[in-house]
Length: 411
Image (cartoon, rainbow, N blue to C red):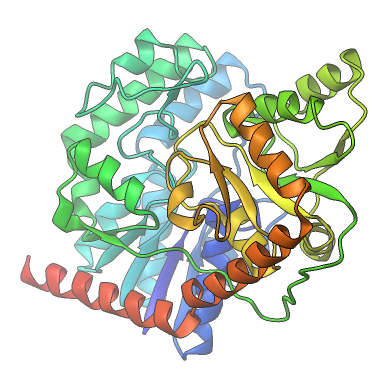
């Protein structure tokens, strides 16, 4: 089978890309031909199909008014993407397309050529973009569902995109244009990694029979767990941003001065965190910066346990899977898809999101009980072996592909 795998980034940027690359390996090892479609970037992995990739754009960098104006068509309906995917289809004649994150950098304009060539389309939902103009169901740092069932104008009223009126207007416009054009109706099957995300999509108006629950997958090759020895620190690793609950974590750690917290990652909150730690003279928190690959695996393995204090609707965080595989329990907030992964008092501990005292209590419970850390770590590893079965994931994915093909044939 020839399978298009489509994602806006072609380098390891986050959880979506981790799954994007892992599934390509699984498919390739089982005899399928995988054809990627993405965006040019200096950090990209090599691909013989890169000549079809989208031109590079970075919305995180400052833009002139003229550049922003030119970016509007790309966000809403990219003719470049439509033209390039058409050329790729003509050359490789794929049997199915599996989409991941396409918003803004690629756009759903690619769905027209896919439909015209009667190619079945599946999309894995890595975030809330189809129901929230700014991906995360957040406004001003708080959970927000005001846009429920197509009330996207609230993104303008709340200035959801970094407090910027112009950017929020563009996000609102994008959502209404896509809704009127029925672009995402051209997708045959949606895959939801968490039950929570599926329930949110259904609650926001997406038909339940269009969404299949299939948890993400992470290969465990050569990842040896470490249950007993550690270097005496708690670890957070991931994006350093406000919705991850790191300010709550910092306050919780102030009352546990005998234990070090290491934060591995970068993001928009990095400088604020650094200033806060210096200003309040907090001695037990160390910012490691961005860590990846072998260095990250070693950092996780050498920790006592990891913590995920998120205050937004996490989907299916890879940081929990990576911790479990390496034999580390996780202290995580009871929000989004996190409680689906962490079995309280078995593979970790859960606490009320945003509650400093509850988080502090759970951290102390583990810090003062090394035996419990080891027991939970062993159960976490065993749980990961049940969850992360490559053959089982592949078989379920093939069922979904066949379902999408049947639906496309019946149209």
